Image 1 (cartoon, rainbow, N blue to C red):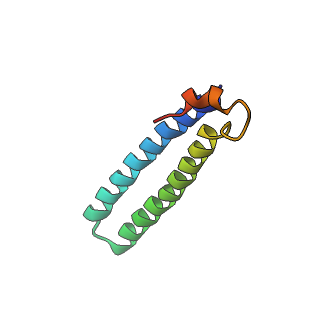
Image 2 (cartoon, one colour; image 1 turned 60 degrees about the vertical axis):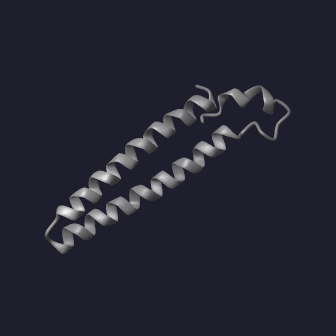
Length: 80
């Protein structure tokens, strides 16, 4: 598997995590108990950390060859 393919998989997973955060936020708004709201908020916060780390990993994968001699040969792998 090429780095560009791995980066694309990470992007798909980021989109799924973002969707899950929206679901948790909706559940948080509907929750009546403060403890439940707090736990849902903490879950969303944790997922946001995963999203940030995944985005950083995607960036590194897409720009891995930028500083090598063959950098231009891999420019087509970068996701938009």
